[in-house]
Image (cartoon, rainbow, N blue to C red; front, top):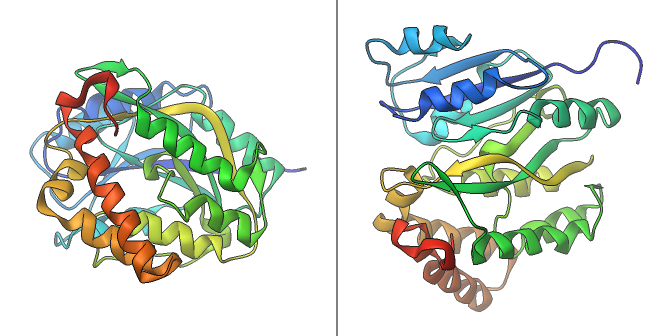
Length: 274
């Protein structure tokens, strides 16, 4: 591909005061390929601008606070690059993440999504790979079958038919191709899964790095933990499975997912699932 490389940026989704935001921003500043960084929030606080400035990130405040889906949409709409990664404030990125995105984006400029697998962080340490992560990586192969990129609609849907193995903060989205893309703002947890299904219906490819380039932090105050405890996760899982399967199968799959959520607890340890 000739000419300038495709542009890419991070927009960090920030909500309230996270003790991990600085770690996230530091990991973005340490990328081998430097890209613009910003923090998008509807809940600013005194000193947040200083935190951003310390790590070379700009602060973008929007309001009012209308929920997580709206926050994601505002962050996506606020980017002005070809590609954007909606980073989560609790997570960290390996230094090679942006280099991988740029390489794949340059090779396949019309792809819709580029992402990597991830590892988990508990109490500041990388947790050994647990059962659910192994399952998610197996789900990816239902569509990728060993490839690093796929384009066929059936194979893209196959990745998502038995669950969502795609971690949202690991995804770079092609704004130039997706245009006025939006996450559903009436959901609390499965906005990304629905979005990936919508994107799978479109022409164009999706690309994957099997090397985990994102560290996902698990802690009791995370949004994932909150939606599991409140029962929203089960209801939304069932809704998505019904889009993909007959009702009886959808209910069975949602029930299996519910049992697996116990691994999001910090008590599950290395042998749990997440």
